[in-house]
Length: 94
Image (cartoon, rainbow, N blue to C red):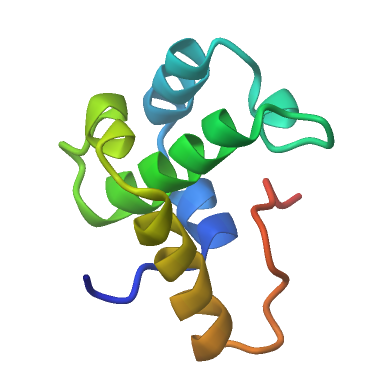
């Protein structure tokens, strides 16, 4: 696996259609998906979707569902190693 982009910057590069697809697939808003108390499996799948979609515009919610927990952890860990000052976890940015 190549080193994925930062989740927050990847999220910012998604189109509105991508964000709508993410919310529809997850069944919750972006704020709820990455907020405190969010279902962790959905948050992890959303993280995989964001990273995957930023690398491949044809990457789907179903593709993200095929990632393993190890894949998501590695994607987040790779980014943390690449930029130790980057916050861990996803952010929608402002």
